[in-house]
Image (cartoon, rainbow, N blue to C red; front, side, top):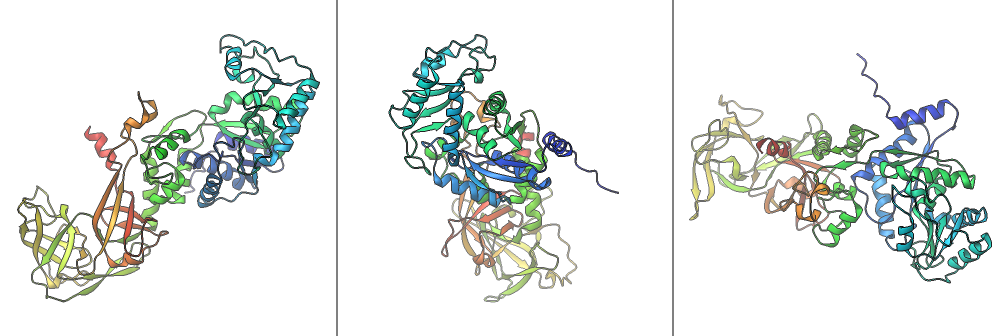
Length: 553
C-alpha cells in the first residue's frame, strides 16, 4: 500500500500557485537574523522553512544579517549563526548584510524625500509617541511635517554627515497620521546613532530602522517570498507601501506562527538576561533553547529538523510541548547511539567465588549495526547501580536482593549472598556468587532469571563527571506568570555527578558520537572534557519522566 502523501502547508500552496501561474520562474527566500544573540529553536523552525522551500522547489535561499543596530550587534553572533545554519544541514546561496545596502538605502530615502514622502522631524521621542495617538484615536501632524523638500534634503544630508547629536532628529515617512494601523502613522525610517558598526566602522552615524531596511533589502535581492512570523502582520502594510512608492522589485511578505515551547523562553532579551545574570553558564549552556545549547547537550540536527517538520507551519500561534522535541531526539538516537555501560550511582559488587586476579573480555553489542560488538572487561569486583540492590525487596523486584539472582549484562548470572553497611546504615558492598555455566552466549546452567543489570569492572573502570540536565523552568509557560520570569527557574535543572564509572571503551569517546548509557539515557561527551577527565552531558532520559510526574500530580 502506498503511503499517503503529506499535505502542503499554506506557504507551500502559495509557492506552488505562484510557480504554476508563471509569476516566478524560480523562488528565492531568505533567512534574515539580527546578529544580536545566538539562534534558538524558534529560529530553527524559520531556517527549516526558508531553506526547505528553496530545496523543495529548486530555488535558493540567502542568509542576510539584519545588522542595522550597531549597539547590540557583534561578529561573535554572526559566526555562531553561520555555524548553526550549517550544522542544521543547510547552505545559503549568498551571504549578505543589510549594511551592504546602506548606500542604496540612503539613496532610496532621498528618493522618498524628493517625492514629498519623507521629512526630517526634530521632535523628541516622547513628543512623537504622544502625537501618534492611540488605536482608537487618530494621531496629530508634527509641526515639522510640512518642511520643504529642499530643507528636508539638506537636513538629511547633515544628519548623515554627523552634524547633529543622537536623538536630535529623525527621518519619518509621510504616510497617514489617521491610519487605523499605528505602524502607518509616519513611521521613523532613519535615526542618528553615533556608534561603531561591526562591518562599516564609523562610516555611518545614521542607520535605517527595521521597517525601512527589511523590505528594501528583500527587494534589492529579488526575494520572491519574504516569510516572517505573525508579530510582523502589522508591518505588512508598510512593507508594501515602501515597495509601491519606491517602485522597486515587488517582494511579498507572508506570515506564519512562531514557535512557542513549554518550560523555556524564546525572547533573546530574556535569554541574554539568563546569561548576564549567571543563571546559566553561557549561550550554549545545555539547558538553553539555543541551537548551540541543544547541540552541546547532544541533540542532533536530524532530530531538530524532524521536530520542525512535525510541528508544521500554521497561521495561528500555539504552544508546543518540550516533550515532543525530546521524543524526536530519542527516536533519532535510538538508531545512531553507541551502546555502552556506565554506573552513575555506584556501589561495589564482589563476586566471592570468582578467581582472584582473573579477568575476562566479553563481547557486548554496540547497537549500531547487527553483529557489531565491543570488548568489555570483567573481573571479581564490579560497580553496579545502587538502585539495583534492595535490602528488603519490593513485590515483583527482579534485581539484586538477598537470595535473589540476576543476569549481569553480556556476562554471568549472579546470586546475592549478602551485603555490607557503614555506620550510617548505607550499603557499601554487595556480595554474590556467580554461575560459571551461565556465560552469555553459551549458557548451559538451565537457570532462568527475569532481571538484567549493567555493570563496570572496578579494575578497568574510568572515572567521569556526568551532568544531568532537566527543564530550564519549573512551570510550563514562564512568560505567562506574574512577577519576574526568573523566579520560575527550575533549581534542579542541573545535577552534577562527580563519581561515575564508565567502561574503558569510553577513553576514546569523541564529541561527534552519541552514546546510550544502557538503562540510564542518552549522553554525549562535553567540550569541557580533557585527557584526564571525561565529562558527559545527558541529552535525554530513555523515557519521558515528566509525563509520570504530570500524571502523579
